[in-house]
Image (cartoon, rainbow, N blue to C red):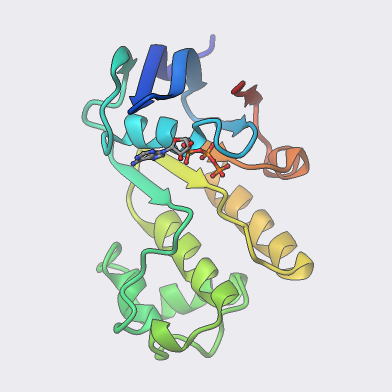
Length: 195
Ligand SMILES: Nc1ncnc2c1ncn2[C@@H]1O[C@H](COP(=O)(O)OP(=O)(O)OP(=O)(O)O)[C@@H](O)[C@H]1O
């Protein structure tokens, strides 16, 4: 039997005269990856922000989030620029040893950059640090908002595989523009949002 983790019903959200969400409903299964797709500007990030409690809806409700530990990769990296890579990751998992974190870094080709300041990294490296930080944090539900944007093909492949490995069996809401990514990561359903 399917277990629902989050149930969104009749969600409505306006910014001034811009009706972003209207009577939007969806369910996300517990322990599975749910993918959300839709045209740019259709409200995917807004939906995620409402689910995370960072934004309030005008109408409707979002059930199941109460008490859940949330982790996220936002569209922006949101890293601490003046801390090292290791220090950024340690913020979310202080119990992990340096060796343990280095092992995870190796899996996404970040070997050797552990003591570098985030401000000195390339865009693609920052992206991978943001992804690692979200995946290594303790969470019950993970939100991924176009996490693989800006990675070259080879790195993207590796990072998607790593993310899939880490997320299997967890509740994940994954926003992407690429259906292939949804398939590769093992999403159980793809929700297509209309404008
Ligand atoms: N804080 C805000 N104030 C005013 N308008 C906003 C705000 N946040 C989002 N919007 C508007 O809401 C609409 C939906 O934005 P949102 O970021 O949710 O879309 P999206 O589907 O995630 O787009 P993309 O695929 O480009 O990331 C856009 O028209 C955007 O301009």
